[in-house]
Image 1 (cartoon, rainbow, N blue to C red):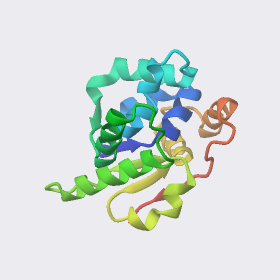
Image 2 (cartoon, rainbow, N blue to C red; image 1 turned 90 degrees about the vertical axis):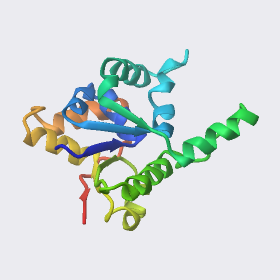
Image 3 (cartoon, one colour; image 1 turned 180 degrees about the vertical axis):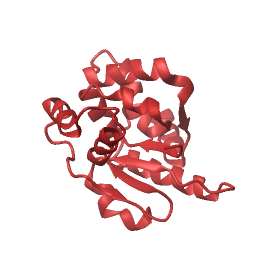
Image 4 (cartoon, rainbow, N blue to C red; image 1 turned 135 degrees about the horizontal axis):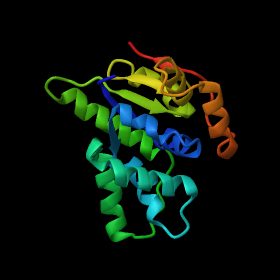
Length: 178
């Protein structure tokens, strides 16, 4: 797959929980500034989870192959935090930052048609906004793809590894494209 893979925060935490971050090395990976703050930057905190620490270590090892994209959402959050350092972000800003990035990618010449790696119902509920500009791929569908490529022995075993730390992670296999 040579298209850009843009993961949301949930799949990154799930891949880290299942010790599956190495699968990202098979792709061009792009993350939004907001998703980076929710995942990789979280690994720098003293109270960081094991998954956030794993994401930071993975990023440090593979930074040349991971592009962070600034978004209007991320710029707005940074401006707000400049005047209110304790600002608590509302839900779904990672998803909205991905939507912002998709708008930018569609305005580029030629337009890009990336793959969005998701794990929550927000993308399913809003899929009508996305299907013309990208392919939506759930974490489970991604694991099934990795199995088909023989990068992992079993998508089911990988899913069980994820579920040990993230039992409520979105487990349905969805691949949605135009």
